[in-house]
Amino acid sequence: MIFKKQIMKQLLFSLLVISASLVNAQAPKFGYLNSQELILSLPEMKNADMLLKTMQDSLLQKGEQMVVVFEGEYKAYMAEANGGTLSKVQMQKKEEVLVAKQEDIKKYETEIQQKLAAKREALYKPVLDKVKMEIEKAGKDGGYTMIFDTSGGMILHAVESENLMEMMKTKLGVK
Image 1 (cartoon, rainbow, N blue to C red):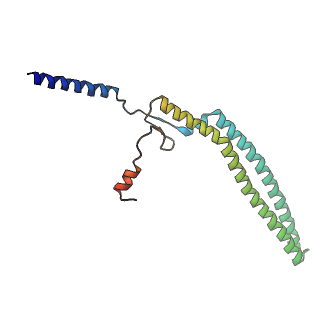
Image 2: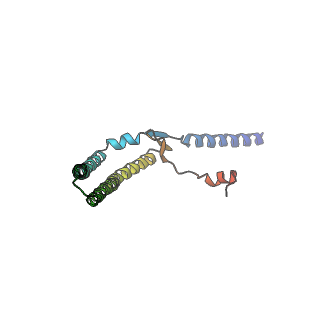
């Protein structure tokens, strides 16, 4: 009888410990957001887009002027060539000048793309870093296991957990 009471006490104690741990165990908490919509709604991003547009318009204006000059010179060359007023040597020299100007336009187009990409990176990076930091903070403060991004199907925040890469490599025979 004493033996049965001891077993019952231990069993009751075990049940209490298990139920207490289940109550304290936190169920996974998930959240989601559309990061693209969030980022586009930020005043900093709208300002960055406006600055980029202004820069792009300015750069394109110069490129358009280069094209207008080129087209004018090309039309003049064609009129002279068709009029028969140019010798073959003169035609060749004018064609070389036109080809060089055409190459300058192509180089300028590449330069525009590079300048805009660098400016975009400089303007967007602080905004994107700020958003990333705030999402991480919200995930930790809110106790979220994971926060998903509905705009791209990515995980924006995840609780630190065990990396299963080595175990999976071993199971798949990868060394």
